[in-house]
Image (cartoon, rainbow, N blue to C red; front, top):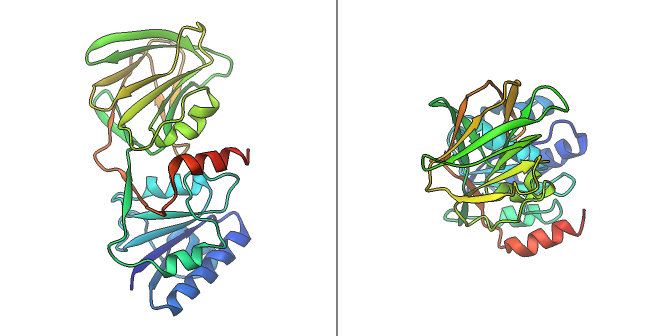
Length: 271
């Protein structure tokens, strides 16, 4: 039997009710079930912190935002699986009707897929890790920013744009796809740069090996912000150097037996 931590969207009563019922069903099968602190509070139960959960599996009922928030809060990455309770849910592999049967059959030794995260530092200070992407945008609407991209110590490109997306392969099906970036196999170890509404059409998306040293310098005098996975915001100023590297700790997704490209095709048909 396994130790499972259940996380739910807390802004949706149906999601909370489903999560509570799922927990009871899994407990009856002999699994040890806990809820994270926020979910437990919404259910009137006792819960545990997500920062260092001492469990075998984290089960997340929600959309991509709930999954991203959970990964952000885990200081030590634990295998997770998402049950889609959102609009499209590119990060969720299981739909609510099939989840109880899938989870009841899980045993120790299940396989996981490592999803590369992207680490960000400012002037040598670690800021955070993104599973999907980080967005650099101006703090003042309708103002363009000037960027320099430095690869292995060499100035690779300078451009003006409304902003810049720095995405992992997993994040290629998120904001980066809407901004015109390519869909990337999550097994590729690379970092995707996508300018947002660039001034020059010659400024195109770049996919760069995660083994290279990547730096992004903000050349504009305008105030700007770095937003990591929509969860964390950092203020930037002129000449700040953002260092972009492969995170030492990837996210761990349970292998639910779904082909990535078939899943993306299915999700895109719903849009």
